[in-house]
Image 1 (cartoon, one colour):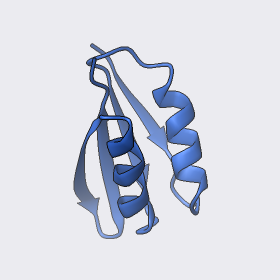
Image 2 (cartoon, rainbow, N blue to C red):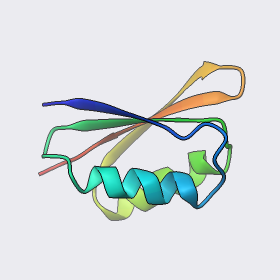
Image 3 (cartoon, rainbow, N blue to C red):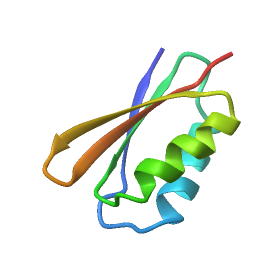
Image 4 (cartoon, rainbow, N blue to C red):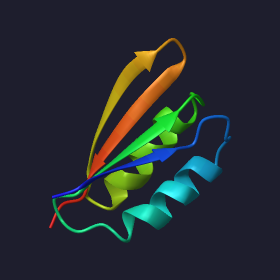
Length: 75
């Protein structure tokens, strides 16, 4: 099970969702994608998008105004 990081700092929606979705499609079940963002709208949009794909998401504040959104691909 791998962990992949996607840096979308400075990118505004919908780019973080589009880029993360493209990479997510290449992952295997059990893999995790860590999306690093500074765009607060992505914190709402990304989890909503991946909920539709039955993936689990977790958001962590890593610095002032910077978040990591971890998306785990399920079976």
